[in-house]
Image: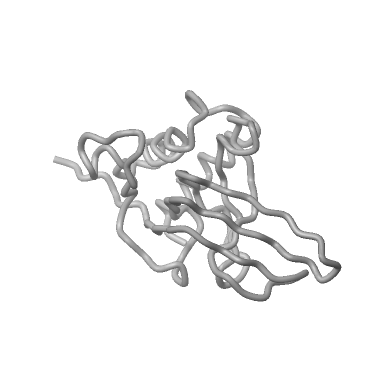
Length: 155
């Protein structure tokens, strides 16, 4: 894990259960990067709009994710199916989260906000690929982009 990534995740963890700014998921990502001394989405992209697919740093693969990396979601859904026939489903239509831990390939814990009716920072488990997982199986759909924070350029 990089020092920069650790600082990004630490910002989110320090704000766990509290609201960062307006409680939007983008705000958590932007403020975490600012706090860590990393380039923000607005520094990378310039002018952004509320429906953009934000860029948060250097593109990485889901197999190389580390703590502090940022995931950008579009029309994401996972359905967790248990052997007893029960299931649960979660969606993230347009969303940003920060990797808190890599549990196994395709399974991460993330810091995020503006989910489940709460604007407070929370830690949740998300699935990045369809397949068998501990306790059942999961089906994943939607788009995901993975980013590693970049150091802020000094002039």
